[in-house]
Length: 171
Image (cartoon, rainbow, N blue to C red; front, side, top):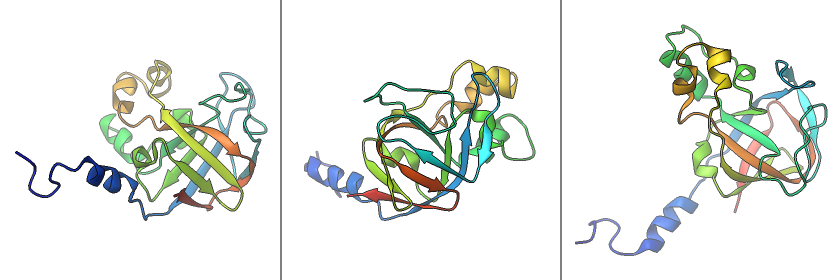
């Protein structure tokens, strides 16, 4: 028996997945100048095509799927609530490069997005939390982050991005 609204047509689900009219906003940019050091919040940064964020210690492999990481800005309050905190978590504590708002990050999986006028990212997969979340957030930090770890991306086209830039899905 088919679900009454969708019928048997799997292409309907594909069409629903492709419908993403929202635009987002780049809320925060963080880079880590040295390994295991805190992230530094910056207002703008240059991303190198198929490489890395300038000023960040990480040097991912060309063609790599994890050249930059993103986290949902709206999730910062949820993670804080799971930990019993009164205020949202600061984005830099979660070891991601970009915090974005206004669109559901998971809906971007396996898609391309444009940030500002120049940068294009291929969203390559989920960025699951690691054991360092216990170190950073305290007991329960790992579990508080489950489902809220964000996404990884490949830098398809580099350029400069700035806090406040618009994020759009490339159809």
